[in-house]
Image (cartoon, rainbow, N blue to C red; front, side, top):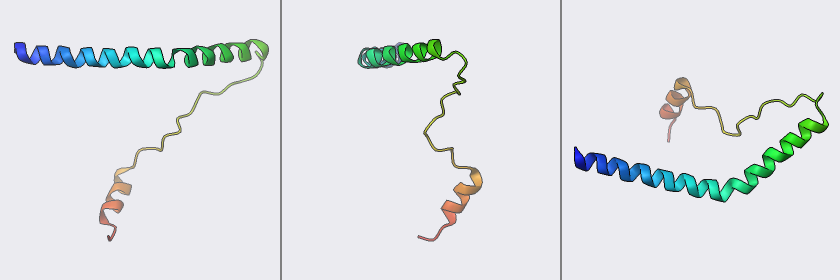
Amino acid sequence: MRDRYQKQEHTFAEAMTDRAEWERATGHTRHLAIAADAELRRRHPEHHIGPLRSAERAPVSDADRQQLMLAPR
């Protein structure tokens, strides 16, 4: 069990290192985006700003997946 926990601890440490790197790399840009959003809302409080939408495609449904699997090659 000790080896497993040490491996898990190493994995978590790597994840935290990656997260800290991401925070450092994107911190300034995220701060500017938050400041711009706050300024827009301050200047135009009556303006409705809808939620952000993801640019990712919707997941493939089971029916579509079956159709893709049956397609001739």
